[in-house]
Image (cartoon, rainbow, N blue to C red; front, side, top):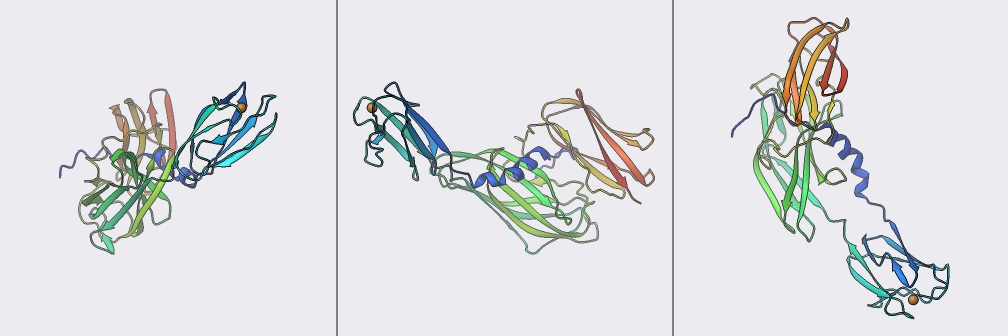
Amino acid sequence: MIKSKRILKYNLIALAAILIAALPILNAQSAEHFVEIRDFEFQPADLMINTGDMVTWTNIDQVQHSSTSDDGIWDSGLLSHGQSFTFTFDSAGTFPYHCTPHPNMTGTITVTDNQCGCDIDMVPDNAPVMVNPGGSFTFTGSITNNCNMDKEFDVGVFVRLPDNSLYGPINTFFDIPLSPGQTITVPGIEQEVPDFAPPGTYEYVAFCGNYPRMVHDEASFPFTVVSPIKGNAGEWMLYGWFGEEGSNSRPVTSGLSQNYPNPFNAATSIPFALANDSHVNLSVYNLAGQLVETLVDGQIPAGNHNINWDAGSVSSGVYFYKLETGDKVEFKKMNLVK
Ligand SMILES: [Cu+2]
């Protein structure tokens, strides 16, 4: 397996925030839609809704009209001026309807089932997972399309740290195409654990869904990082799932994220996201505002990046790091404790 250059890691903070924030959307609220009966027309005549949604027809005309299903599923009866009728559509399908007194007045309600989605699963090869900092573990990952139509799904992979915060995504995969009911199972996926990961209990987490609107499913398993450092992994690198390092990854927004670990001794990792190819300067300053070290100064491709800072040669204290991309400047603080 080819391991490409260390400096690039796909760390889509924006997606993390949005995926997590979007979790409640999964339990989508039913919506109400409105059709006016006006000038001897249903307006709109054709309406696309989701299962569980309601449609309310209101007669604006002075003459009586009805909303009557061609298949006898609903019938408003005659609606006088200003009267309304509401029907809830619980099943998917295409439902033509008409007005009983004026059969040339027709409309269609198309109901799609948006409750279908993806299922994701991850099974570690050796459970319980014990891993040394700098080492790796392997697992089998699978994703299933439980819709009855072709779909594309996105997957984001995260690590829940011993302090219970969610770090990542350490990788994202976009637009994985799946036919109806199809499952893609990938064995032997390798997750590296960086040498700076402190010992403790972690959780490995993956979400699938449609970025950025919806999380359909989540899978996770715990892993324990145990001393001492063995191996030379320097980042949360993921190999072997849906193509090399999520080559489709592309953040929606640029931004600087908190370094990890923090406080740190004496190496830390600074994640940032670039929505577009940009000239980037990432530099570290001390409290006096003096430049300590320039970590990046050059053209960087769009994507999620993670830059390591080895602070072995500087003394303990608070440092700032500054990310300049185009016309945007961001600062964050970090704490070196030796
Ligand atoms: Cu009518």
